Image (cartoon, rainbow, N blue to C red; front, side, top):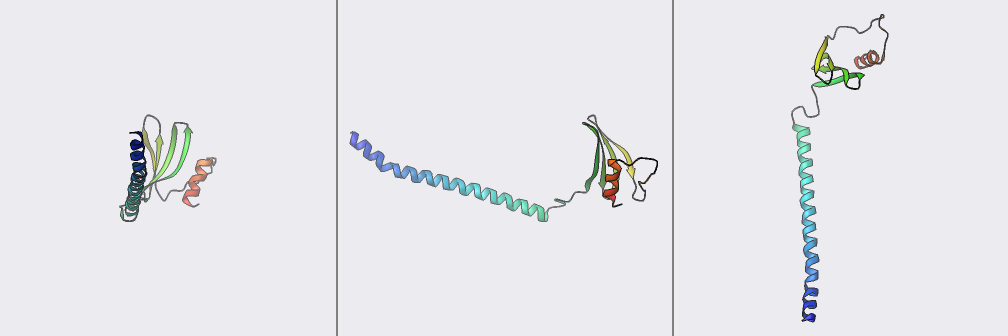
Length: 122
């Protein structure tokens, strides 16, 4: 009986490896097809999606007052809005018109003002 068992085991061993190889090949094929489909969907959304990659709200600059409090200047469809952000909430501090100038000789120029001027191209 021993020789028969070893003969049958030797006979099925190559089939086991071939089966495992087929399973691994199908797994890689399915994963490759899934990755390909995801890249195609990403391409279609970028090319034909509505405002994909183009934001109507842009952050112009941010000034941190403390680790959890900051002032943010955003641009919404060409209109600049100054926001105050704290852990409790967010509030609009000012609405900045396009025709106003930020130059004021009474106020010393700091990092925030220099960033604002650089963003406006002055």
